[in-house]
Length: 372
Image (tube, rainbow, N blue to C red; front, side, top):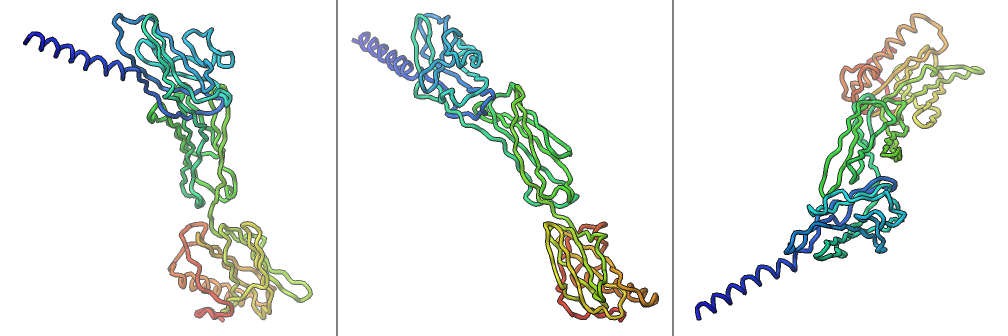
């Protein structure tokens, strides 16, 4: 009785260990999706498992099918459909349960998603039709600060996801600077290649396109770009001047800056309101037409959030000593205006780009402390 019970228990143990193992052994590990680019290679990492046969298996056949059940890859190349011939290959050793697939020159017509099938001669075969792998098309990404300041270091990065580390992409930038490239392995066979460019923009870069060109195996080219927005302080042009016509005197102050500047005329101890203001892109032109009296100079001051600039514009000269006095008075005016803005003792914009808030100046306000 005891012997019969022990034998029954042994048989039950064998059934418990073997049956569930066989039922769960036909498994495959693949990502649900990989990123790829049309015209480039894509790699699908794959590993599979199967119940151990009684005799050692020696001949394995791996087959990949697309969503239309067409053979896109086969251990026997003669079985591969013509459009995929010489474009697909198994990367791993099937006897080591590696079923990874590489596809060259990926096409929209390849009919993804794909699934794997294993055939073991003299033993069994299995199609992992419920474990399909999709391909999502990836686009390069370019990131850079929306607004940058002239002369300050700026970093722009250009990155792309891919699954084919055998042929990493190369990067070409449209702007000079210090370039650093790296490729990082992610998960499930995915890779990220990134190029970082560090450069110093100047005003000529404003509204210009920053381009990142990515070249791949076989010379395929992708490009992404962004428009640079460069902030810079005022630059009063040397073409600014005062002129007279038919006894009418007018002064023009022409300023280039980004963002556009506030422009003020100072005559003696008065801040004068412009007669006309025009803006053309980054250039602001302010015109003053008034009774200049006996003055020989008018002061033009331009301010924006980045910095300031100033200039003395000559009027018809009547007295040399008066010119000296007026010029000195204009310097005092500039100092009082800047101190009133909370800046203190400052340097000219071209020497220092500190953030200078615009003072509250109103037309016809007296500026005390000037020489009359």
